[in-house]
Image 1 (cartoon, one colour):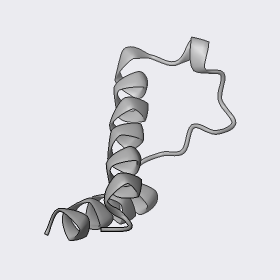
Image 2 (cartoon, one colour):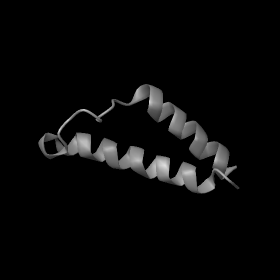
Image 3 (cartoon, rainbow, N blue to C red):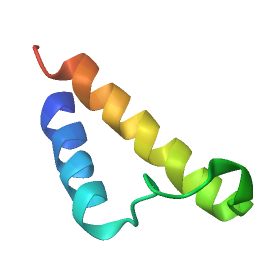
Image 4 (cartoon, one colour):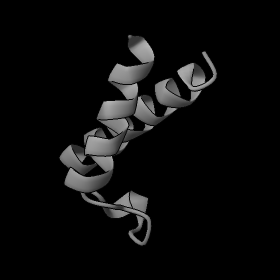
Length: 52
């Protein structure tokens, strides 16, 4: 159940949220940093539960 939940969130993040790979992280607004932290958290949880 958790695996499916984080998998779905990871896919939604991939298609709906902006990508920040080419931007300077020091120049981002606080809102952009929150989005990056959220994407990192979801990706990390997805990878932890991937093999379950």
